[in-house]
Image (cartoon, rainbow, N blue to C red; front, side, top):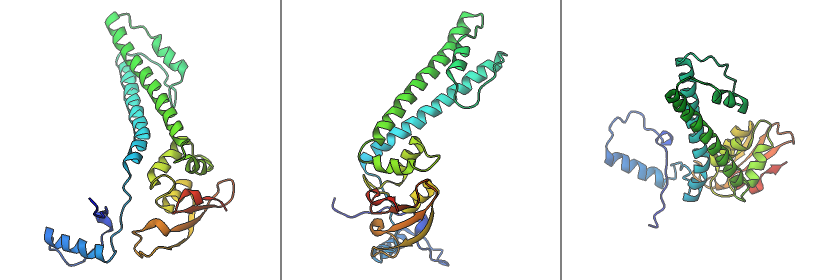
Length: 234
């Protein structure tokens, strides 16, 4: 309602050693004093649209977890009935799934119950593919295209990891909340940090810049807190 509110984690509050008295009144007075002095570090709170975007990769993780649980049920059922089948490493290839479909128990009730598990696995695999395609489409929007291209230029970072990094550090379409987060994702070493803003405690990240070096296959990359529109090969 027009009031400027910030969210600050308790772990970043300046501590008063020796003061063991803790009441709501004292805590409120302390927070008001720290806020007036500009000593509270705010954390970035995603907007409603950004939470919608994050739901895409969050739903994909949930579907993958559901599929893993279904795979465990299938394996447990095979072990319980003494069916020996060498399981491949990693995702189940189509050949292995077809071998599961070819298993016969000699009993209608057991056979159809086992097939329900296989149908559930097939359904979840299809849903994961659709959610991955949705994530790919989101990565091609103006909000994320440039950031994803920069992150994917690092060897070993694919679409999923790049979008996860873009969601984790984004502070709105076109900006990255913390250059250190980008350095951590890309494996860079921050070699210099300077503050252009007025807040010495880092509550305003708008003016912070970091130059980071890393083996990206194309030289140095400059990461700018003011926006990924300024980032690129140096």
